[in-house]
Length: 116
Picture 1 (tube, helix red, strand yellow):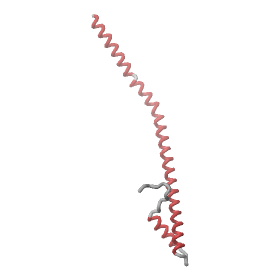
Picture 2 (spheres, rainbow, N blue to C red):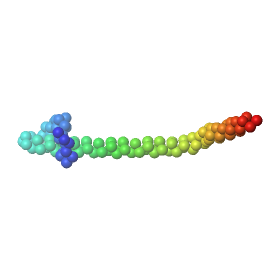
Picture 3 (cartoon, helix red, strand yellow):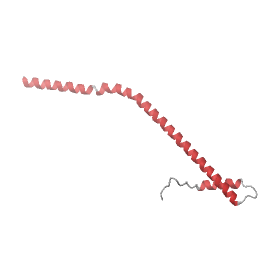
Picture 4 (cartoon, rainbow, N blue to C red):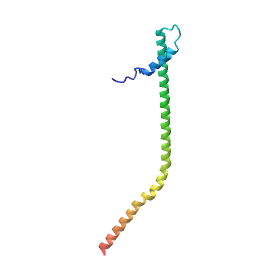
């Protein structure tokens, strides 16, 4: 069975039973079963609408929380980046120059030994 986007979702059995319970609790003398059923349907729609609103609020709060966390992570990364750059050139930039000097020294030593 495929999910249809436009089809309204059916109410859960818990929501239906809760709506019926509330409708019976507020039932007036002389009220017909049909009227009680219609009241229960109205209460059920109200419960469903409330749940939808609460889900939307929870999604919005979660989205805001994630954006806040993302901003904090970016800020922390921005603050940590200059520190890493300051430390990185001293250690990683020294290695290529050291290797270059050793290779020139090796070539000079090789040519000096071969000439002499």
